[in-house]
Length: 242
Image (cartoon, rainbow, N blue to C red):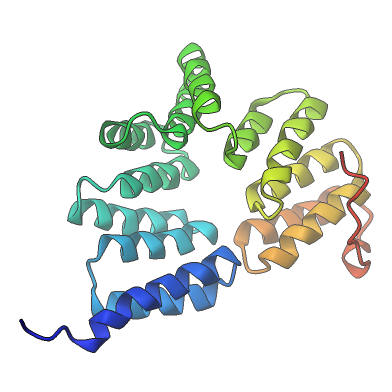
């Protein structure tokens, strides 16, 4: 039996270290470790998906899609590659191709709550309201503890107060979810609650200061409000949030 090169043994360790950094929003460090893993095994689907996940977290959806596509090409039966590719395309508002990816993921692993969430969101944006409703009900039945589910339910809810309640349910599950934080910020601005909008936006900034969507929301906040001292004040007590 031939000896396995040491650098290949280290590749999985580098990848796992990268995922740890990704989970705590240390994107630069995450990318460095995952790139080290890919330098050793350039076409490893899991490593490619990991790199795509870093780009997805940074809001660079085109780059994320590229790496998910490569992973799926290398391993057509990789459920996570198709699921994440659908998510990237959905963020790019390419709902037709995104739906195809989710259906492919559904063929590989059925039933899955994440897949049905993606299907529901795509159908909503394609005007298939009844089918979308059925898909989202399936997602709630299969996996109700998805923060993203409550994020999208909040986004499609026209009543701002009800939307906030839905988002807060997702927030309680994942208080570091950038999507939820930014949507809550937008709604609080819309409702004229500048102070609460600033508090939530500060949370998003502290978690991910280099995220382009966070920067854009900060610009929107400054344009839409006059309470611009929010980022100079320490807000740490959110116990009054219901």
